[in-house]
Length: 415
Image (cartoon, rainbow, N blue to C red; front, side):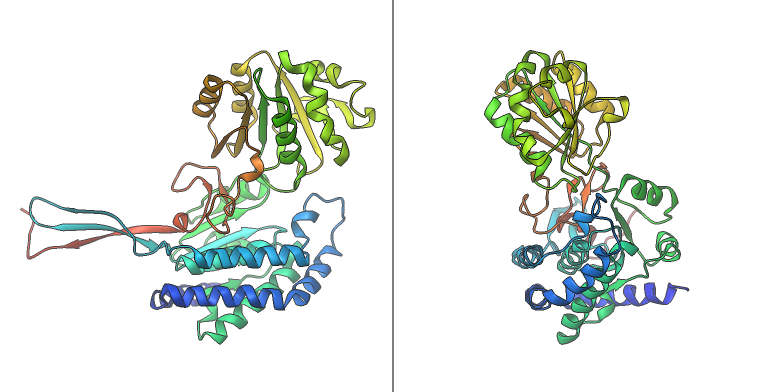
């Protein structure tokens, strides 16, 4: 199976997107949102076939599962994207040189964006809406776990594009096999940017084998540090929300770090977690503080593997530290540069934490669950970048553009 013709068709379709104005793009997106809701039964039918192949205990199960409510949320995200200002044609810089040459730095699409993702069918809608709004065509490479769901979704997208007379090749879903992955990783000259979304092993594989540019949307090993000066009520609410709101997402809490002077408050901090039956792996001091106050069947001694792990389940670890510097060191050694939080009423400690932590998103007294494109006002997101090249954090419309220089003169020549 040679996908060269598919890549060529997508590339050709991407050039045609330049002829669509923002109003036309917005009309397509609103129509897609409406059609997604109208075709909920079709999407759920495909999704049920995928769910039937996966054990409910699999951490990916929740990410794979679509419901009527989730589809409504996806449709609203698409509508939100339609309301956002176009990221294209913006003048980022304008200047006139001493020789009279006029320079303008203008935002433009990348062209063709490839996405490799696992059991996350919502990504198919998110990626298409963001790519269309930013003038990009997209190549989708979903996993076999979500293939029925993805094919139902792309069928709906193609039907809407056909109604508007738009080349349906602006979005293509590749076969779910490994050979398609290999060809996408090496689509030099056809795909301008590749973004992997999924497990750390998937991201590492893409980084090691791709011959086209890659932006890493890394795994989320997220910490919340409860400082010596933390507010107990705020801390308990933040920890519970970050851990239990949705355990399968990359911004979910994996480790609570607690100042040893506040160990007596640890049972109260963790008390709300009991309702969700969260398993806690605690170090020696934290274990002693929780013993007798937290269900024995949910409390376990921590090991070295308890830290630096993205659990993606109702499981987390607890680490006690003697001061904020030890907390910072623990995050440095075990974090993934995704989302980190401090709970404190001490502004100096908050400032130190914010300046010292190297992560895409750093929070003070706020749940890490907010690391999300929609929550940041970006509409949907194409991923959470944990690298520092080009984009960092939730990647919305602006992050899906590059720029070009427009140079105007009146016959100037260089000496």
